[in-house]
Image (cartoon, rainbow, N blue to C red):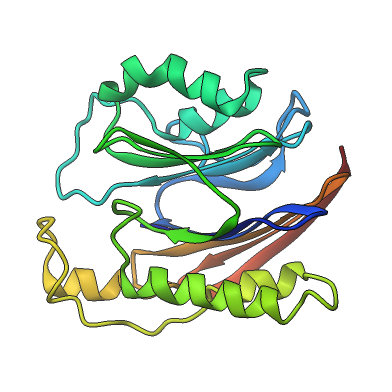
Length: 252
């Protein structure tokens, strides 16, 4: 499970601000965020499937993917993380790239895909096939249809809104962005749609920051994308304990 909150064009010189948590089994191997050998992509890497969950390009593109919650697994499905890397390596604008890959969507398990090409911000949901070209605003989604507002999604959006409204007289800070999704509070889940998960498991997954013995929040990433430069911070965790923090900044 994952959680992402972001602000689009809420300030003229700050097109995109993102805070995101990646949740995964601790046993699934991955490397922290780094510049890939080509030097064109800044992202972590899923060593099992080869893709990534969130990344940026040297030219200012941004992409992130969240899986749609499902109790079943299709072993033949393509890796959803490859969608992020394919877009970041591409020279096409977001809308054109997405249109080209739509025929292949059936080969993946369900996902939400967020794409930013420096101008447009696009959100695609594979289950309903809806593509949204987002207007300026503050948004959040997790592992369901973006129109389904889980409590932690509402909390993430509210926290980001409050922080940005209080920061416009000063600087938006990576550390404070990352901390917005640090709550371990769980919520009642009886009213959630049935996805084959037990109530106990759904309650565990209801917190913004997840901690359990075998599964949890493994990284928190904050992105500040300005017109001429980008700043990123990734903090990596295991069982709720901070293991590593890396910061990156580069000019466009």
